[in-house]
Length: 238
Image 1 (tube, rainbow, N blue to C red):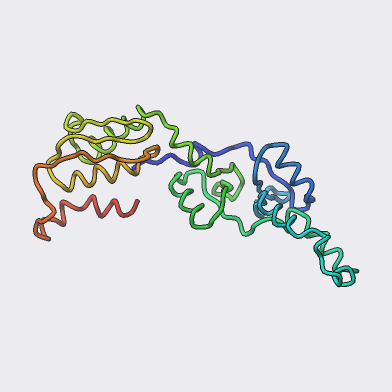
Image 2 (cartoon, helix red, strand yellow):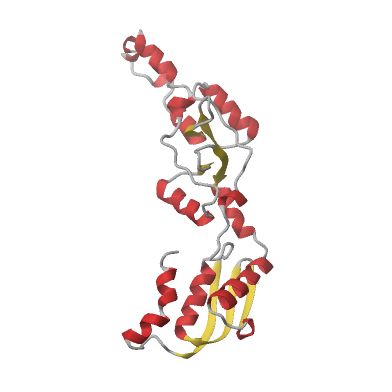
């Protein structure tokens, strides 16, 4: 199935900070631009990491007043300078960078976010240059697709494109992202494919399966079934 690409939903005008930006500057950047995280870039705009509001909160959760009595003695000299460096973006950021490319799909980005437990992903081109940023909110934008667009894609991509069936065989109705499929297809395997592919369309919240079939091909001989289930093998790669 064709999923939307990252370059179709990403924010191109990216707010960034330098690695030597003080804690206060980073916090002010969040407030000024109403963002919850920013990439940290060097003098050549290479992305070094990402600093988020969570990073700032964690830093603030250990204020000076909570230091043990012996800390003041321990922090003198070079160690005091190290403590000051802890307040910069370079020491606050998460690194190495978890990123995506502009031609990756929203599904790729969603899986990366879930696997790496991050809220945003810098978008880097083939040269490693920062071209945008994508957040969880951006990914959720696909669920704001108009119902008519979702319906058109189900008919064109699933029924006509993959199954090569007339759109008149299945009544496709979409309301608030929920797709209702009603009708009769030739084989039971086609019903499974139609439902599964529809679930993978961007913007689909759920699928109500009211489809029927004329032939149950789920019990066919292995040598016959190998050909008919080829689309199912392909689907596992989604």
